[in-house]
Image (cartoon, rainbow, N blue to C red):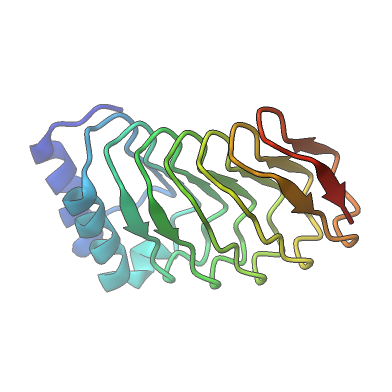
Length: 179
């Protein structure tokens, strides 16, 4: 959904004043920048009632380079920030309902995946600049992990990831995968 600035500001205001009732927040290809993302995240921090209703947040194909996801998004099940210009992201450990985390085609050189995100079933970090990745052994629901097109040389997969069925590693510099 491409929005102009006035429409975007209207959504932010509806979050602030509590009239935003949807469980999906989809702002793809809206030319949002860091200031827009910060205003949106601030609104979600300031109105936790609205934030707790959001199950899906998609901010794909924007111009965001840094974002701090609010810890008030406790019902969030899907977070999609693909094709931005993200160099940094902070994912809070309170997102325990999160099942999918999509961050492909950004500029991330590192990411911390909180060990509390035990509901995660799919993570896509393909097309970034990751040289290393620390995979928490608590991600026991993880089925799909996309790490293609990064700068990884090795990877250690915890033995506790017993339901992992797809590990995408092509276009890396992998010399070994260890349990």
